Structures are given as C-alpha cells and as structure tokens.
Length: 381
Ligand code: HEM
Image 1 (cartoon, protein in one colour):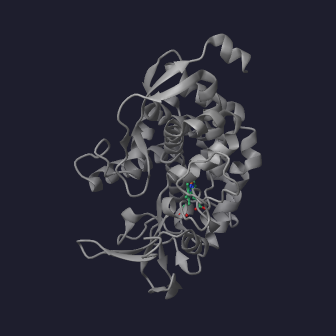
Image 2 (cartoon, helix red, strand yellow):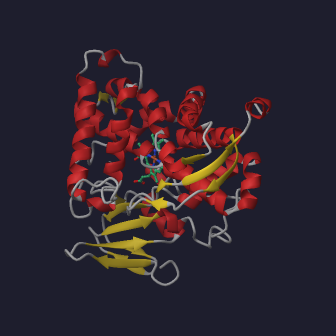
Image 3 (tube, protein in one colour):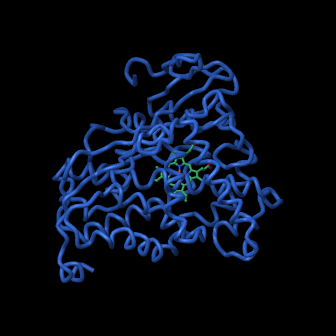
C-alpha cells in the first residue's frame, strides 16, 4: 500500500468507509494539522460512523484551542522534567511485576508485563491496589474488544461493559469525601484550571479514562514486543543492555503498539495525489509509517543503534502522547531490571497476538529465562 496505494479507500460490508494512509509523510500531515483533520469525530477506527461523545471534553477527542487549554496544565505534571522525580516509584512498580518470577525459569512475559502500567498509573492516580486487576481488565477490553480472550459475547457488548465499568469506577472515586484533598493525578484533575475554569465532573471522568487507557493499552505491548524482537535478533540482544535508550526507541518503532488513529477531513484535502473529501474518515497506520524506507533505511532491520530514529509511535502534532516521558522511563527501567535479573531469555512456546485493529500487541509470550544469581545481581548494581 505504501508503494502502490498510499491513499487507499476501504468500504465495509455495512457501507461505512474510510481512507488509509500508510506513508510516514502522510501520517504526519494527517496527525499534525488539526485545521485540516479533526479529532472531534472519533480518533479510533472502532468509532467510525458513531461520532465521539467525548468531543470537546476529553483531551484526545478535542481540537485546539480547547485542546491546548486542557493539555497545558496536564503537561506540567507529566513532562519529562516532572516525571524524573517519579523514577523511584517506577522502579518499585517494575520490581513488583518482576518479583514473582525472579526465581522461576518458565513464565509468560506478556502476562507478567500486562500489570506494569497499572502499577505505575495506579500509584500516580492514587488508585487502591485491590482495584488494579479489574481496571487492567476493563482497559484491555476497551482497547481490544474483538480479542477472543477479552470479548464478552460480542465486541459492542465488551466495549459497553468496559466503558461502564471504568466510567462508574472514576465517578465513584470523585464521589468519595476525600477526593478534594487527594494529592494525586485525580485530585489534580479536579482542581486544575483549563482556560480559567475547573473541569466538570464529566471532563474529569473522561480524562481519567483516557490517561489510564493510554497507559495500560500500550506500554505492556511495547515491552513484550521489544523482548520478542531481541529474542529474534540475538546480536541485538547482546548489544541491548549497553544501549538502553536506543533499545527503547527502536522497540517503540518496531512494535508501534498504538497502531492506528482516525481523523476526519474538515474540508477537501489533496493527499498523496488523491482527494480526501470533506467529512471523510482517514485512518493513519502508525506501524506502517514507522517502516517507511524513505525515513528509516532498511526498515525491517531491528537495530538498537539506529541513528536519527524519528518514529511516530507516540503520534505527531498536537496530540503527541502526553504520557511519552513516563512510558519511556517505564520501559527503560523495565529493560534494565530485566537484564539485571535474567541472563538469557529464550522462547518457550507459541506467541499469541492481540486481535485488534487499534493495538498491535502480544497477549502471551512464554519464555525460559535463567535468573542471575543474587551475587551477580548485586555486583551489577
Ligand atoms: C508505549 C506507550 C505508549 C504509546 C505507544 C502511546 C501512544 C500514543 C499515541 C500514538 C497518541 C496520539 C493519539 C492521537 O494522535 O490521536 C497518544 C496520546 C495520548 N497518550 Fe499515549 N502512549 C503510550 C503511553 C501513554 C501513557 C503511559 C499515558 C499516561 C500517562 C498516555 C496517555 C496519553 C494521552 C492522555 C494521550 C492524548 C494526548 C492528547 O490528545 O493531547 N500514553 N499516545
């Protein structure tokens, strides 16, 4: 498609249709310009034809200028500078996830790492630990309602159950008497000013949902997919412990866990020699853009030393991932601790991929891993 159909129209059996862009340059153009392409009619393919009830309320479904008003105060608490102070807590979250497997040789890396972002977001948002498993499940259902391991009867029913569960959960958190005094991210959302006013309850709930979904639906798949890439590229595995920042970036490019995003044209737009008509939906395929040979030489080579890695795994333009600094830190800490705990990680059974056109993910990655001795772990710090 990149080579022959850079603007590809697809009509679904029920008559809905959308255009796909797969080239890096087109992906950046569509994601980067809200004057041409709006996020307010849904930013996920699963919303095609349904619109977005959260338009103007939830960050990811809102165009500037309101988007800027919402984003500016949130940036303050999630910027690279602000999250630097969170490192000890991220290390604790990684230890919590790795601790149960430290003395085991066979385990499922994807299952284990699925809990990681919730442990980070849970502590950031002040969510009690006993609720983490349920919230992890609901966010997974909301992101990939078609996956057989998550689906309850039907994707639409799965989505409804997940949304109801999550919205009701956050509404309950806000009703709690202690809410106005809490010094966590939920407390911050209730007290921050966006465009000179406080957020409505509905806005707080939507943005709690978006933050949790943003973290839970993506980070584990970047981690598991990167480990799988290392298993498949032994030379890169040997280089990885000494090249953590490069590993994180190449892992993000390679896995592109948030794989597609939707926009709608505000007016007729010429794109890649074709025409997008006003009102038409355009799906941006992030994983494809991140393999565009015009930008990434030898794009199907996994290379932790790849120079000038301008991947768009965190998006591009005004909606560039708000959680990117936290995700980068979480991944770097995870890989560092993984290498410290285990000598060698090898495959131990078939890999299961998530069934989703939104998230490119892995649900099962059975591994055999040789734990390093306590003295080797201590020696290496
Ligand atoms: C590897 C991990 C992650 C990946 C690959 C990822 C990817 C993305 C992408 C591609 C977007 C752009 C959406 C669009 O253009 O419509 C985005 C937005 C967003 N992400 Fe992430 N994300 C990750 C982790 C996180 C984390 C940890 C958080 C929360 C702390 C988070 C919260 C958000 C939010 C709130 C937005 C909306 C930003 C806006 O609309 O201005 N993400 N993410």
